Length: 543
Image 1 (spheres, rainbow, N blue to C red):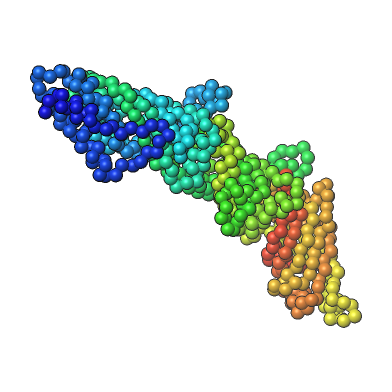
Image 2 (cartoon, rainbow, N blue to C red; image 1 turned 90 degrees about the horizontal axis):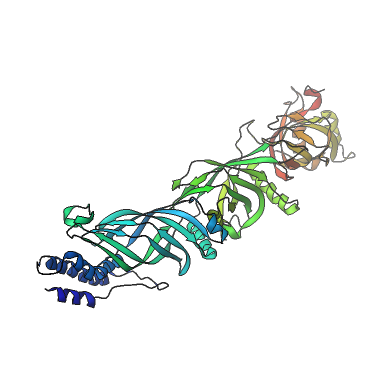
């Protein structure tokens, strides 16, 4: 088996190459075996060739057969990506100034190669990156060690420069929402080989050659499958409202929510820095058939992450987002915002959508802006008094025997007009301004009356400091008791009568509409006030 026949055999073998833009098809096992066979023949021939003393030195042989041999190895292996670490470079503003984005990447990869017979390195390269046939940028890599072949784990480091923002945003959406997706890499690279006398530090059976060779013009074309984040699985903690210093009453309050994110993707995102997030109601709930980005309802809050925010793989630690309620002064928007607070106050989870508004890092801002993630805001916990009522007690100014006689007299009608005082609580950690209240009074499931507080201006509003418990209104307000369900109303009057004639107290539910202002917004809080105690004022100890 002479040198001439070896070179002839080498020249006859087709070397798989892929030009930019061509689809990259995965070889079947049969075709792969046909490809590997010539490579093995080359290895055997090279070994025989080296053993002949009259032939040219090994370095000349490698130069003659190196490129087809290396090209075959590079073309045949599959590259698997374990992790991609993104972090900001020392400077990215020169790229940003000309409409491009730059970020540093460190890619953990593993692969299985045919043996080179030397220590191989993939030289620095400019690799074109494509997503579904569209190019979006260039990865400028540093030298990447390939070892001597076989099963290896290595790292590919470099800088990603994005010059096609529209395509880049498509791949960013795939990272956020999809289970997995494919990215194509293409370049013409140089492979450096080092034998035993030029720094090969592999074990002896992997370093059988001597000398060194630099093999240019090797086509590097790979498709890599990457894992997406599947929506990131956002978990939210309880909503907190905290008063801020203000020069006017009912100013803005700080909104704070703790959150944690599960990231199952291939990407480890460092240096996200400050992320701005708009929080919307979910307009498609409860079906959620439409994507989150197409289901944005009413924006009711604007929040930011803390500076230096990063997101690793797996489940994150809890982190805080803070901002302000931001509700347009339109009735529809106020009603939708009230729905969120109503769910919150009645301890029910509320479906929300977090939409990324931007980032202080241009790279991530371009990638993530407009991405929308679904999440649930948990309901308020009953940390005080067992409930989240605003109306907690009612004191009715009423003479029970006279009231009963009036209700039983067909000439006096079926409605009693009385007055009552109410005790109010504030379930929020921010000042609550009560500007009005209408409520249907229910007893044992039956309608027995109607109570209303007049509409008040902000200057006249009842002011409840944070976590106020049982503030008694200084004024009495009208209540109507209706005899449409006479047995229920008579039972109510019997229960609130003082002992021993009655129990001294009864418990009613109020289907309430509370006109309020909190955190700079003016929602109408529509939710049931449960187990509100009702007593006779003259027997309550009140003046």
